[in-house]
Length: 214
Image (tube, rainbow, N blue to C red; front, side, top):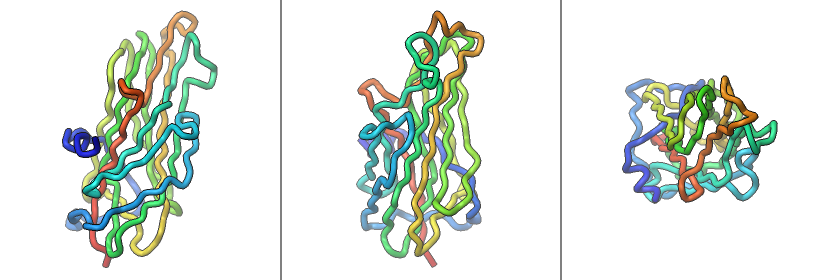
């Protein structure tokens, strides 16, 4: 599954930060030893306990976060707080000695049904523990819309944010889905957005760049 997703070539990015590298610092190939990613904490209305999982690709080039209950909605059948859902993952990434990593890209997919006049936003930001939080990137979808969606961003080599060498810093991923009724009538219709595929799960792929530590 991980290799199949990585082979699609569809990516959405991670971005911005305080530790930038020059364009000459090109990422190296993945380390031969495997990395291990532990989920320290999972918090948020979009990822109740037991509904988010992390897996690492066998070739160490990517990891995925799988959601099974990530839905924002507004209108008939929804609660007042359902219009916005979020999830914060706090990850411990154990990297082979002598290497550091950066999140180079990510791929978000889901499904949305938006009535005419309604809008939805997918937003994410990423930061290492102890570093300033990055500015968020967002993607807006406008109704009428009734289809799968995907958000794609990429990060240039110069903008990659590397984990500090020789330090254990947890990595945080904040994501959010938000649905706004806009000019649609929420008393008669329902608009929603999910990070969810036809089988009930969405694999969000985060791709890694590697380099040697000094």
